[in-house]
Length: 507
Image 1 (cartoon, rainbow, N blue to C red):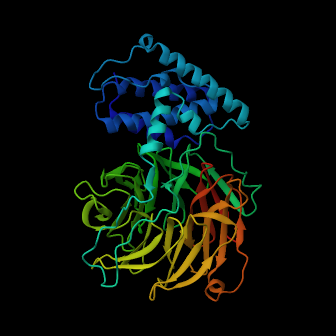
Image 2: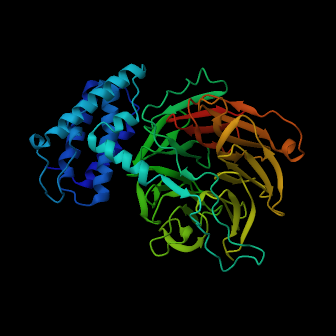
Image 3: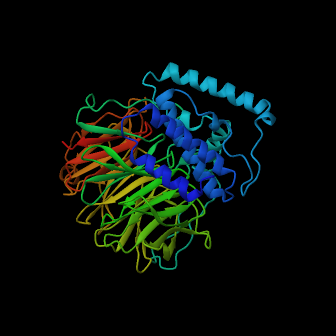
């Protein structure tokens, strides 16, 4: 009897819970049998979102099998190509040249992997082993992750009814004739392995389980667990005491943002395509989800009291094309209100919950009063603003940009207090330590090789314009996409294009 969609998801999660256990031949066969069951069940499932979820599961477990055996499960060559609801499977004989081409592609990829990856760890290559997956990855990269703006296009910010009299609408500025803004770096075909924790000075340990760029990290309020979201469509919860995977949820598309609720009971996520979802943090079970926006959700943030969830997208809501930011009731995802603005790539609530700060694709740094809808503009960067963060006391706002700079602003006066620039050529994450004394920024090293680098600045020295050399943490082989301080301030987590999470001891 074929498995139902619910049974597949349940089995998938059960397998995930024991993924860290020692690998035995019988376990490999168990996974292969599960893959075959998924392929068989796919022909009877008509819902396109469920079918995409199954494809994501197939890619995940096929990569796992390859890691253990260096062989792809044969069923991955043609994953449930029927029409659904009992539709016929695709006849292998009728594939003709496509099957030959797929086999040739598989041989080429396998050879490349064996030659370039001595460690044998396969991420996106394994995930795109079939011809269908390769096409899907290319389509997603081109259509789901890239927002392209062209000089002279005249994209204008919608006008808000509650703007202060001195505020004026701004236009998106593009410094070059054509600028592609990546909400998250596209998955690398061949990601370089990260430096082992024992080799990276200051690192405590690494977590290696994603098969794509790690786009988002967040510590639980008690600091015992860490949630991660990646371009492999996976949301994972890690036990930091023993560095093991507790659960994994497959979101069905690139996960761009993830966040813990203040009480630690919920995990919110936003993915490419516009889906907003809520997971039970203890079990990893989905509790609510909906197509909240018409395009990629770049950021999610809980209010400090946990009563509101903000989502920011490059697209509007289904009923309003200008709703770049929306507020929701977390438990039910009932929409409270929405704001119109330039698409935000990062958002953060002020400690008192009154203001929502965000950085945008036009390089501006702004703040919204969530009750009155009043908008305040601080200033701008020379490139997109990738990350914003309030200080714990709410007096400062830090912003990081792809221009390689970190700026510190006064919340009260909106004046620029300090500009920090070290060795990073691009900044994708900024975060204050819980005591507000340090400010960390993560991005790309200036050595031109695209390695990841974290710089930790002394906030007091920055505000007094004292010269300083930031503390640096180097261990990622590629650009860092996200960083997060633990609640006690003793650890810092980072993730990026090398598909690895590193947890550091804070100097």
